[in-house]
Length: 344
Ligand SMILES: Cc1ncc(COP(=O)(O)O)c(C=O)c1O
Image 1 (tube, rainbow, N blue to C red):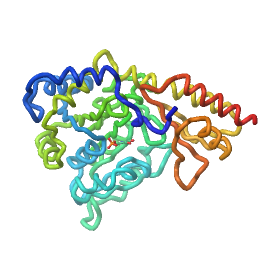
Image 2: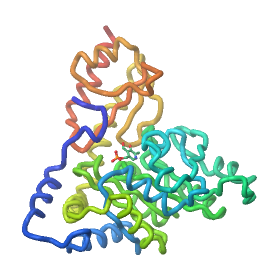
Image 3: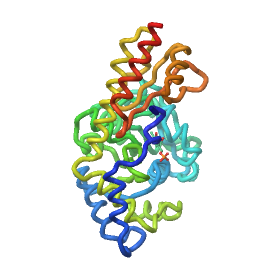
Image 4: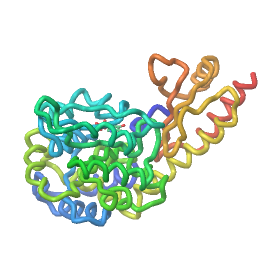
């Protein structure tokens, strides 16, 4: 009964089967195989865009390499203070951009806002002593579980573009956001002004598969060189392609995300009824942060539930994450146990 993260999970049976099925005979390397070509086209079509698509094995590589084509070494990238690129990528964005600076916007209920971006840019005058505002990166679903609405994304991209900045979306949990908003993938990307998307699959049932989707033309050649130079051009690319083929087939990606979000609803609505528990943010998708008495946390762990304390200095806050393979009854059991401990 593990709610630590959506990457404690295994792999969807459909994706595992697709990888095995791709394991027949020779196939041209480095993405020159038929499956990769087809998947690149399918992903662009999913986003209703004439996009350039690149497959990669990790979300960190997808994010950092995406940013490397958006910001020069002397540029700045605006993001949320808890953004994965800021907190959890060991400086990879700075490394791959050759030194671009991450500039933190205020937290607004787990998101960044267009108004704060406007405020941050208002005094920028191209002074050579300052870094050059170059990009914005937002995370959809965000690190606190918040989902940006279509309007919020459009407002941010509009301010960014008006000031000559490009916009990156970290979509490690993109599927959960689409499921939560019940919108089309294009609604929150190509049609909302996103220039580059890191389209994650690993957290939603793939072994290791992410796609960088370049909506803005003219960056593909540079990205191809950067991916290779970074050591992220897979020789046996067909196995990344096989994962994405299965991920998209019959909307597996959305069905998996809907299931994860549904299990999170069970947790969030159940826990919100317990007086000793405070939910810190609205759990829009598949992640929840809750403040609980230490005794309750101890009791839940003793009952066999695994989850992270979050953040570390505040020991009574825990994070729960659901995934494509979360057992619904485990979520129900968590709520029942929390309720029992609360009454004890
Ligand atoms: C929001 C977000 N972006 C990117 C990543 C990076 O993924 P990876 O661990 O595959 O590098 C993660 C992983 O935890 C994440 O939560």
